[in-house]
Length: 526
Image (tube, rainbow, N blue to C red; front, side, top):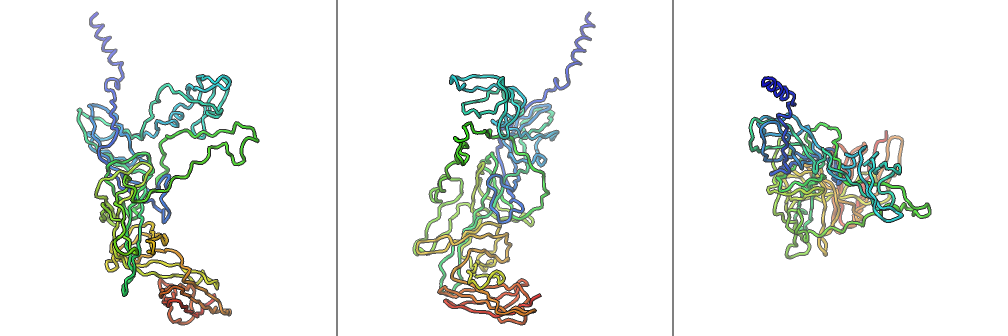
């Protein structure tokens, strides 16, 4: 009898599943203790603005987390990672036996996520009965959703959620397994013993971008000197995700590192339900402008002046006027300026203090502060774009990126706002774009057009092989101006004042104040 009992107990033990003897344990890391974020610009964005809804750049994020790791097999959940994470790029170090498996949990706990998880399942719905005004709860079966609306089947047939015009709400029995309150990366690992482990999680994530925003303040010209300006640049960082990065080490990379194209990254399912319903009124009650839709929200209030943004996340102190002439203005004085370093053939801008990059927000930190930058104002034209209509010329600000002109630093691509002085103070003169410019490169920014400097180009006569032209530049300003007019044709003979610049015949001339100068030239016809 005793032997029989021993065999029975042994048989019972052998029938217990192995995973029941070594149950998988769950370890949750709800947030990082330390984080560093390095942001790369969107490739091929050119001079377009950052996509505010979902920036097209990316970031390298490094998080430090401390966990209590149990002995045996454990599932570790890293909550609060960036929703744009590329899970295949994730690297976890600090585990005694490495990582056996990785999973990105992209299903978020939200109204949309709940409907998606309960699709083809039963839920309860509480609604107001139109006839009595009382609430009624019934079980329904979700047949479609959440994109565009929710369709459910009840004892009354198929209906659309919240399309009766009366209050309705769904009740879910419990939170479905697999829904996370925050984007989560899960890994499976094994440890021979229980321990406290400090882990480093590094991964690439989409939904970030950055650019430089320059402020060029033209200074009053002194007799016998070239015109100068003060150049200030913001490092503008955008985070399109729903996760903030608090007290982070932040860096930005300038240049174009090679990166292979990845497939579209699935964004986590989350957010509210977007309900689209057919109007319940009769035809004549629906306004012609489709007014059954909600009216658009009011426009946002104008941004507060910089001086009033004491509680903002921008790391600056306010600008102030210099004492003395109202014709001069100081550029913003930065408390913190990003430090530029070389990273191979790329440039790295490191913010020396920790910052917080808010979800769905932008951060600005000073990155360039240069005073007394010398430049030339050049009026430019292309003869092929003008006729005898006396059209205004565009003007550019031109300098060379060297120490002699007050620069000599790498200039990352970005927007340039140019301010001119007036008796009322500095006013915006125009905006242009600046591509990446290395040291010793020529720097040009197109600011706008001048109605005081005009060009007319007139064809005097034409033969089968020649076209005879006259270009006239008129200067209505009270000082001389420098003009460069490109002639993108093959010129017959040598024309005084015309030289080859970058392979294009170009007329360079200084037009006296309140005067005009003409040029006759002949082009070959093909």
